[in-house]
Length: 487
Image (cartoon, rainbow, N blue to C red; front, side, top):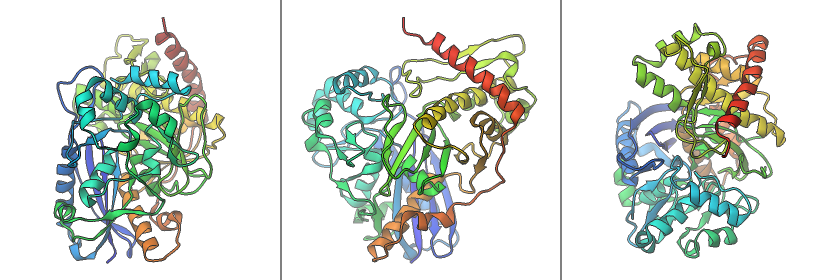
């Protein structure tokens, strides 16, 4: 029994891997895509949690049918999930309404109100503003709620029948104290007086969420009683799967949103709230930068011009650094860092010939990378050393993007062999939990380290391009300040 199932339930789809812990390799991978609910208002981003469950079933079925995967050998399951989403269940454990997601900016006014009441910023994407929005705008639904969960907690609930949370994902709610790794009673009460009684118990690091119930076993095609680890938010699981289980490893994840994070042995608190003071899902802390606009911007160009990312990347290589003056402020759906939840994207410096696929594609890569680098500079200002980066996510294999990131961050960029690090991290956390349950006092880094491998040599920064991007960075920040200045 050495097989472990790792699931990553994301915004655009669900991915899964089967890990053979004894042989030290991934036996199978599978994925299925889905979208947001359509026809909603401006800034509203929602999904029905049952969409995730249907996707989990599809992915598990494909994985269990892969060559070399035997149902009887499974020892554990781990679940990663998109952070911050609000999942509300009634007394019978049924979903009350669709989940409001991390990228939903319709609760911006509630976030500002909470920030003023608490005396510290509450990011719009965090769960707190969604709870206040629900209580205020849908009071009948709020009255029905008995369980407030996060997306990965809901999947665990379906698998085990147990409602619970762990500190990593819980620290992205806005009503959690990352120092004490507990819910903050004052912040909980400010969000809503009834919230406290609707929150589940917290798991300790390395504690299992439970075991597969009969229903969970039927969903996955596994045996009842298989261990289900605590899981965590996708960033926490990606940290496990990309080597950020010890200090000194900085990870950049290129997905729908872009994240930068590292392991810390103590909380890292940003007074302005731009760098999230998350806990890790393994007992430490995970200071994290999140920008809302990343691969979605380049995807807009691909959808607009057709073809694939490879052909657009080749065309973008022929475009010089700075796109001959075209600068893209890439805030297509608002932004978290900088804090611009109501912003829209802006193209500046347009001239004849700029409305071509290669030019716009490079402008998308440069604009999102410059914005990411702005946040990394803030992390460095908080004492976080960024001297080299492990790169993961769907766009990690794009060599041009790696070059741009190396130049704007002024450090080597190393792509990892397993770009879907969250699914891998979920499986590895299940390995760690299983070994702890068997009495082994092994640490999470010792479990994960053998699986974190580079797929290519580091991309080194170029001094000449770096100087050009340093100038472009100044222009970018000045343009943001001018374009989105409050009236």
